[in-house]
Image 1 (cartoon, rainbow, N blue to C red):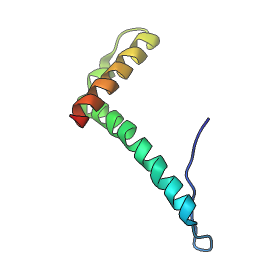
Image 2: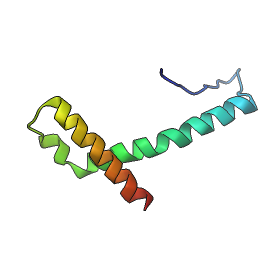
Image 3: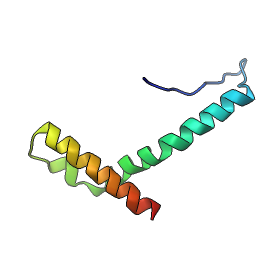
Length: 72
């Protein structure tokens, strides 16, 4: 399931509940985006020479370790 936020326009302003929902979504998404940004800056994943499944497991482990380090 994909969860997306509400979008306002010039003619359609967001209700308070919609703004709150967008805020909650942003709070949950921020740590994940920060983790991927740290991985991109770190660079070793660009040179994996292994199976895709193993690389996925390694990247997930790196993301967890990165989030732990950032939150410390």
